[in-house]
Length: 161
Image (tube, rainbow, N blue to C red; front, side):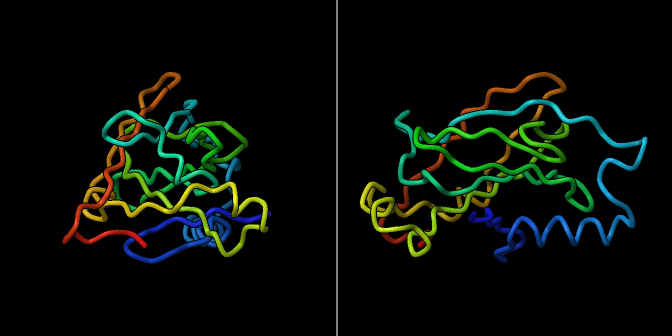
């Protein structure tokens, strides 16, 4: 199993490393506090500006990082074959806490894919790094269906590899 990777403050983090860090910093385990914020279901799709699914991101990962001091708890998910995702925070597919979040997207790691999966993967596209760093969404205290628009890089702009 390949763990999703999240970009936090310009550094790549494996989800288990983030969870361990959050547990150490919070001094407890998830689910042990009666003051735990509730999670709300979050699912969605990544699309380009023209509305087409961002299929080049299939098998990558997405994370929502709360826009607040500490930035936790982080919700994450894997991008499926239709560029769709379902997020999990404490339990599988439980969603994310309500409020504004920064979006972190990690393209698929082609080096870790087996030969058949790599052949089926669309060619990697370069994304506009500045636009990615400014992606924000708000999770409402209800079931959420998000459409997140990612922007392809144009010549001369900074881009993801």
